[in-house]
Image 1 (cartoon, rainbow, N blue to C red):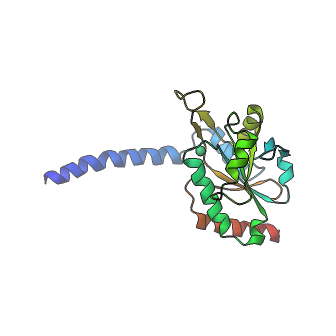
Image 2: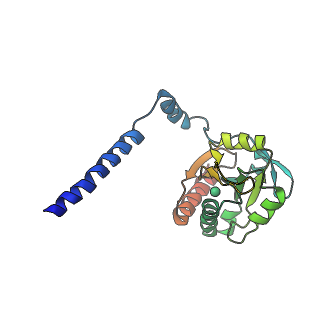
Length: 211
Ligand code: NI
């Protein structure tokens, strides 16, 4: 009998917490949220122009990727776990495509740590065999990075209390799929599995070539 009470004591607060978050997450918080949701069906809410520098030192803009779909991830090369994990998932998904399908998709890493992610640093990082084969790395001035991140609704913030050169950066971890015209198609949340990502990419390529 006593055990039952203990379980009840454990279960009850959990039910309350889960109920609370369900309520918070499903209730539109403001008219701004509702407006944003309506706009998704219209013009792209995510994405936009950027001018950055790639891992060879060349200046590139979003327009340079037209004709290929873009798989974009914002991260940084000093990231201990989240970024390498996401880029490996991306690689595993792309590995499941045919060569022909893969050629239509450009994987892109945009750094949110431009101070440390120099052209040289990015060049070395994107060449890792664990990451997508033709992964390109983009850096820029802090202002250029801020413009790109803002267009993709990516938040990033240096964590406090770390040493000057040895800090972490908290950041949004989402992979964006943009079509051949640079328009938003879909997102892959952190922790997506390669199989479903590959399936979505194949579906997109079929739809895109049909339209
Ligand atoms: Ni990261």
